[in-house]
Length: 559
Ligand SMILES: Nc1nc2c(ncn2[C@@H]2O[C@H](COP(=O)(O)OP(=O)(O)OP(=O)(O)O)[C@@H](O)[C@H]2O)c(=O)[nH]1
Image 1 (cartoon, helix red, strand yellow):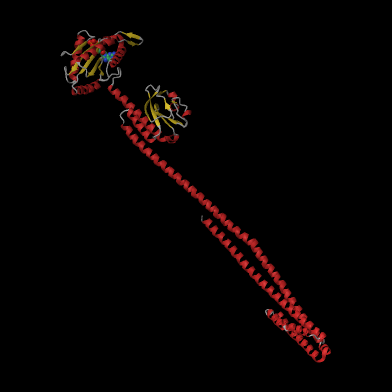
Image 2 (tube, rainbow, N blue to C red; image 1 turned 135 degrees about the vertical axis):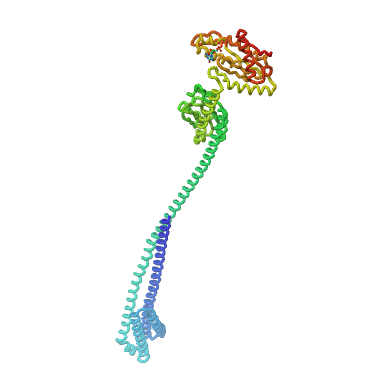
């Protein structure tokens, strides 16, 4: 930058010096031309005065001769007319050559000789007047010839000197003209070249500056874009971190899915989504939640093979859904629909799939935040499923899948309180498989287990939504029937009894013999108003059923 400034200054200085030089040269040349022209005019004036002086003298001589020969007065008038100019012309010549000492000397000699000659002529006329033509002739002796030739000689010398001066001035004028021509031919192009160089330098500098300004503008624009992107990212990250915190607080997988759908529909408003959950059997995935309107629909359930993301355990992004390669994607509404499949993985196992579609493929460039959310969701779903499983394990009994005794006690208390509050009845059955010890003895413990498992299933099938079927212990079971009066409970007990009688169990490829069940029934409020009291009454009824021959239903004694 500084270099350019210095170069420009230097160039302009050189150009200025060149033009000052040219100006000075032109002034000098012109001055010389003027001086030379003046000198030439001066020389010409000298020569003209000499010629005129000589001519006047000659005219006076010829007029005098004419007068002497003819005696006519006109010649005498001419003679006087010519001779009276001669002294003034000699004065003029002396004045003109006053600057030249040699010519001044000659002018003095010229003055002396012309005066002498004029005097000789006056003398001849005087003699003519007194002695006639003879006297006049006698006055024109050799001295007259000498004076005339001296005048001619001096005049010739003066003219020769003036011619010499004229030649010198012509040479000087030629030199001055050459100087001016050289200045014009060399100086002006040189000056123009320097100015042109400075101009080119400046133009380049301006171009460089505008390039630099454009580059700076470009950098600024990119910086602004980067900032906007950064702000976007940081907003995304804030939302993601809030989402992560909220995921921790979810109580079940469905809540986590709803939270995710809310997050993704906020982060990418135009993008529709579906989250699939893989069944425990891992054989297919089912849509669990949707948001937005898909521009390319996806099947409600899909095999892992139907999705390249699930096949490769990697996100599968497609800017054009028509070429997505995923068979589960269909119903593409128009060209340019973008889709993304992101597998949900936890501890190396596939637990689901996140599917997104949008008319605009812009979201594909910012998948990092979506993939991070998918990862957090995977972990949360895995933890929540595990929690669910553990919870089930803690309240379920593994052989029959029915609730365990701890759960029975909790739920019996809760349900009894609820029915009491609403003034509704509640019934309770105690069920015990008949002669089970003997059955075990004959068919083995595994055979007995098969019967208990099948019995558990049957009991679950005969339960309504609000009923609670539990394994009380060993081959003893309990069924709580909220809001059921004694008569309805007895009816239900009878139905179960007869279903058990009809139940067939296969074990190790063989049919086991049928079993029967004895059932004791107690009801709130008639038989007690605490779970323990009702259980005791039902147990007593069961005891009676055993006593009465088994395979029967026994109501509480109070009925
Ligand atoms: N296979 C199997 N047997 C069990 C299980 N729990 C308890 N039992 C058996 O169930 C039998 C219960 O026998 P008991 O209480 O004497 O009564 P019972 O033979 O059923 O005779 P009644 O109840 O009077 O008809 C015992 O032999 C226990 O070992 C179990 O989980 N699996």
